[in-house]
Image (cartoon, rainbow, N blue to C red; front, side):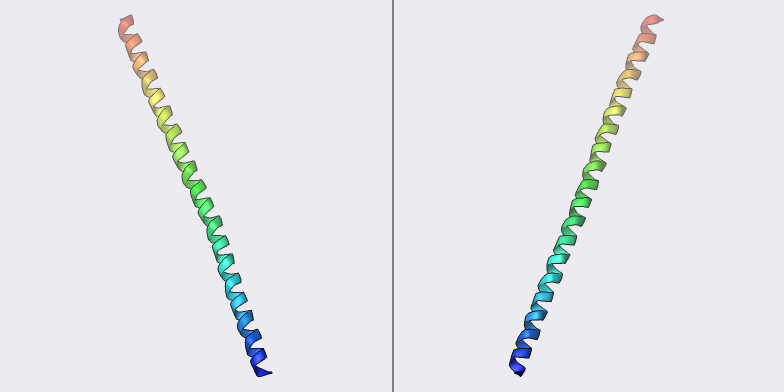
Amino acid sequence: MFDILVDVALTAAVVMILYVISESLSLYEEYSERKTSRRREFFRKKAYAEMDRSRAEKLNRQQLWRQFIQK
């Protein structure tokens, strides 16, 4: 009788440990996805900012060239 209770308790403990591990992995996966998403968004914004800056520099050069030609 005692052996059966020990077996049931050990089985329950193993099941709980496996459940905790699976939940932890699930939470880590969600965290990793959010982190990757934030990183992707950061670099996308950085790339757009770089394109905007490059476009503004080009327009500024064109304006300066037009002013030079008009003089």
